[in-house]
Image 1: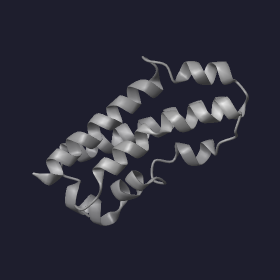
Image 2: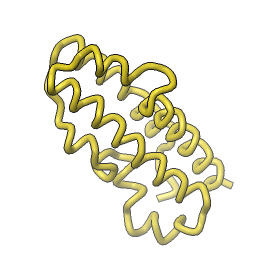
Image 3: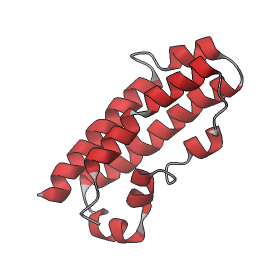
Image 4: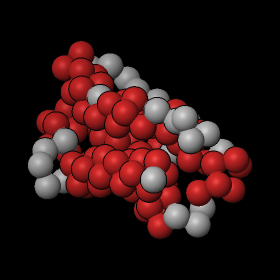
Length: 121
């Protein structure tokens, strides 16, 4: 549980931007409904695991990480929906700085980092 690899979680979430950009470039369909679910990726499964909840639910950074992570997945799913509807220009715009995707991506990265510090201390 506390052996969770936060570095991998950070990298996996940072890689979403590349996955989404690749899907735009290659005009690939994505499972936007699955992307919207914040309990399907490695981090989400760990955050929502009963053992993790029991151990860390009292930590402020755990609660913040759950919120930021859910927000990120909603934003990523919105980009994916636009890709699926072949709205490639809009999907590209949704990945730019200052967008919900960019903001939530930064927030989830910070939340993972802060939770790691709190868990490991």
